[in-house]
Length: 313
Image 1 (cartoon, rainbow, N blue to C red):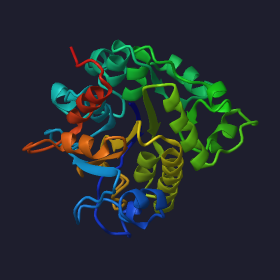
Image 2: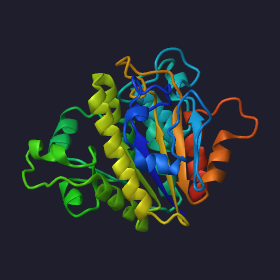
Image 3: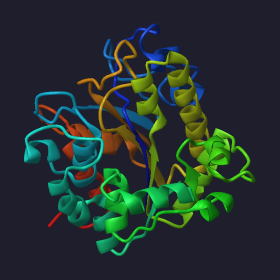
Image 4: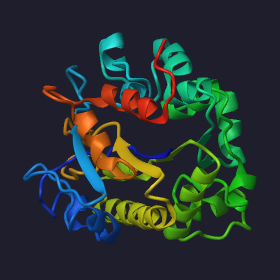
């Protein structure tokens, strides 16, 4: 089995209102085709399809205030409630006391300890490496978990040879960062490249941040564009993956872009979408028999078990 996680920053399940929820307003044919023509909203039952299942996941983690990326991503990656550990939601970067947790218990670490291969699929320009060298604490939980587990950060060469994916999906932003030779990449092609990594790696993660950025901007057109790029990527992934071997998981750390009436994060649940090999069984296990609430801490324990990786020490 091979597992692809597409992590979306700041995407919750929001109201069925195209005036405030760009997920309802945007043209998302790939997502809708997987979910029986619908998108998930708070106003109805969760949609699904023959090989696709969706679970609503609590991102508040039993802590007051608005969920944040640092603690939310820590919970998602490790299965441990980082917000409760530090007594608050914190972000966008992980709290200093959470870094040892990310280093020792993340899904990247457990996959490696099981003798399996991981790939953090994002490719970074040289500007990013220069920045984190000057400011090493300004690293997201996902990036920190990967590097501390021995998973290398990819550079421009990996984008050029098709083995890395631009964080904006299309690579349109690279020309403004000193890479005049980089041509835009259609979202569908980026999706195909992402799926092909599963031929070489057991676990692949791609992080997409433009959704959270759009939510904070309160720019509805920007939000629609970010989601439609994502839908193109999804189309490419689905057409290139092997549904009898590969499992696609799409999830998030907190809500934001699903409610453009505010530029703040929300306390809405986030989706966990499963497509491909064993999707319905995985969704049923995540939802849990008799479990009162499924939250971010339940995701990684399920995924490492599906991969046959080691439980947290």
